Length: 175
Image (cartoon, rainbow, N blue to C red):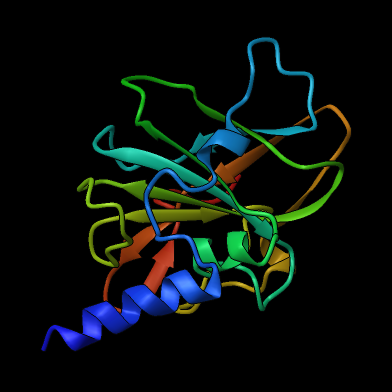
């Protein structure tokens, strides 16, 4: 059964896709010292604990591209940015991510509590731009978007965690 991995590798090379790695989108996202923008400065609130990592990702603000595979977006020349940091030991948890220019972007934050780099429904937390109320599926891109200005745009994202069998939301009531 070696043919399938070889076929997959050949397909990736022939289509121009970049193999997915945790580093995709990070270089473009990294804020500089005294960042002037355009960039999003995101305050993460409502963390369940101080374990693991925070991963903030920026996508085009349309449903087809929101939460799409990172290497597909990059191969198609679309916006994708990623910032990943250990959860700070104390507040505030603020992440800075550069964006290509002023405009609307869909934003997601993962509290990867177990550090495995993927979302675990019963373990991890998520948050989205504009803090939409969550159901069991992903929100629409427009509901999870933030409008970036030409400088630093500061926003607050409230984290959501699984509560019970069919509920997903903030640990405390929304302010």
